[in-house]
Image (cartoon, rainbow, N blue to C red; front, side, top):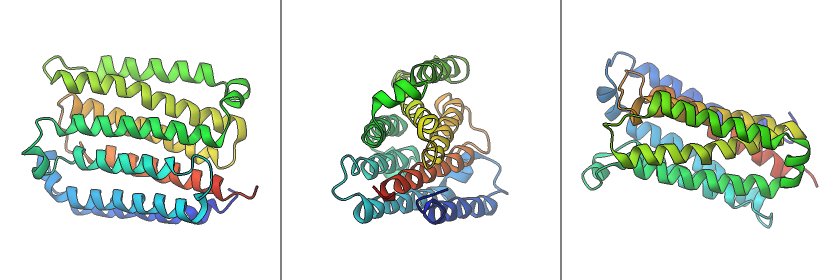
Length: 246
């Protein structure tokens, strides 16, 4: 990869490695409910490191660049979503459905990432050379089908079901733009696209577990591992694009 991407990947890679090591420390706990108290602080700390990374890239390479501030703003919304999704007792005692606030935060993050990507590559280029329309069609239909088959549960709160369904469209659109950009330009857009796909995987697993009401032992670990990889790839890839000469 060009434009310093291998160096930019060091911090995100270290965060994922730290997550895996932490997972090893809780492997003996057999329930998601038992694992969560041991995970909250560590997982929010991993998210905070990515947030710091995003703002550091902006202040070192993004100042004065059109739309560059949207990238750390997207990660800021994601950090808020992480806090809500981890369901700290302080928020659970005040809000009936913290995960719904997490959905709203991540919906805002996806919209902001869409704006950030479109500030780096013209939409016309995506439409003409990146197969954007068919990619978007697939990534809007597939999440809707997954939601209906694996996530929807009539007995769950209506706000969670509706929020999760609509969120899929924002996530699908963000992913379609990233994939289309990777097709069009390649280079550092490839890890961005890979990160978007990891985002899809992470939220699909969270949808069929937490949103649906299933609670397997790995309820938090699989979504979080893929999520950290997703954010790391997106941030490192876009940082490489911002730092590219010209």
